[in-house]
Length: 257
Figure 1 (cartoon, rainbow, N blue to C red):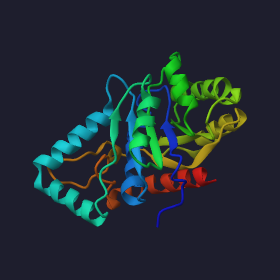
Figure 2 (cartoon, rainbow, N blue to C red):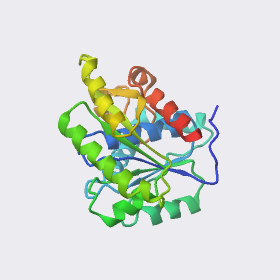
Figure 3 (tube, rainbow, N blue to C red):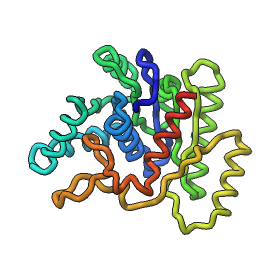
Figure 4 (cartoon, rainbow, N blue to C red):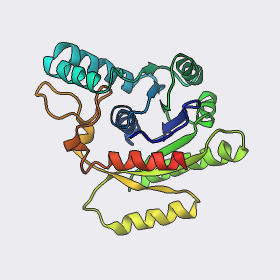
């Protein structure tokens, strides 16, 4: 059964950090696809990560694979039928300058529960600051690495002090998300970092995302189980142990307050 979220006002969400390779694009796709195809919310993605536009490119690859491969074509048809004719969510290739106007246009054309934004991480860009200020929720992926931690925490301090604390933003909450967690690492390291996070006044989500090769899995000619796709949810066999389901549920709890 779908969780209740107001239909009138879509929630703007961004997995955002200035550190490349932090997993924000992968997390955006995984959570968006889980919400849209499993939880039956209406989702859209605005891909502003110029010049690579990784999510828009992923959508093109996904469409091409479905068009050219009978196995995936059958999967798409079965999903379309099972979901009562529900289409794939839109992925809009945009920029920080056009992000908000593109989102406005999207929302005029259809009803969305969530609009995800894949934003670049350069804070010296006025358009990025405006886009971040328009988010309802910002999730910053972090890893137990000194460089990643320093970069992400500095980024979040700027967001909080220069955007949230002005009182002129739409931001309801900013949260940190442990990503690329190595199960073999000593928990003491995480405890030290958790202490730093708490001292700075930030909150980390309870869910953590393990470091796993599955996060790099896309469609393959071998018809292996899918994980990262804009047209299908992650395969149930791969969701187990990935914590994507738990992350999605925790985000819904946060949003539903």
